Image (cartoon, rainbow, N blue to C red; front, side):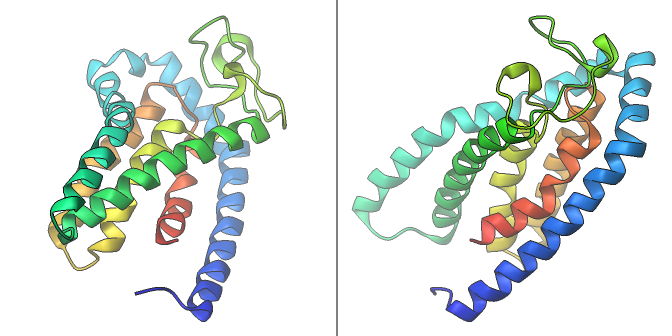
Length: 209
């Protein structure tokens, strides 16, 4: 069923409220949480725990296969209407692709340094003491915010939760799969806390669109 104008209005108001709350949460993390957590991970070598590294592998792979899945679904449609799970899978793949492209644009807008130096001597908090946002600067060395992995995870998973709100099984599976992967991004010092956590409510509303 198509959403009427009133429903879109309510969704827009709800989204604006969530955006305001996310901004407040990011500010709190930026001044009081992000740096202590990043230094804690760095000093205690938490990012040497292999399981955290392994947990960061699935999101890019899901994105890599999304185009093929969409192609298969389009071909499948020639043999009849989709069943419910196929419709949800189609929207979830589209949501993931759009979310990641949106994230790339936001990365250029915010221009945030990374927690740790990983490649090409990129400036970072633990590596060079660089910390903060540098709006409208482009480059892989200043793309920490928002997290690409988080947007892929939540862009795909949120669709399933919204499409099947009464399925406890879906909710449990999403929680069990997503929560460890999101934690791993911080545990590996790939991202600050605010890079990851702020995206959850935004993806929920974005997926509803």
